[in-house]
Length: 95
Image (cartoon, rainbow, N blue to C red; front, side, top):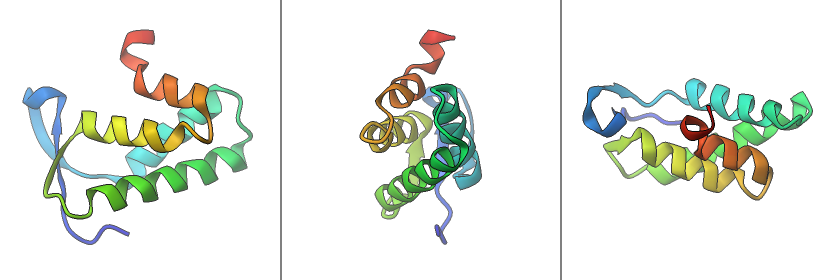
């Protein structure tokens, strides 16, 4: 869906930037959904929706942070899976 390159600034700029990777976002949202026992098909569909929302949000941006992505993904995930959204947003604190 995304045709232009968007640079993602990693961890407060302490690591090198990398291009936005929809597959990486999809996999992490899918894993969060499975962690709260969502059926695989629903987790996959929810991850697709979240990716679409994040890509639409980032469409007019050239640089975003990994925290921006995490925040936007959790916001899009919350109506579908509040528990998964919480896990997704706070995974560094929980683990």
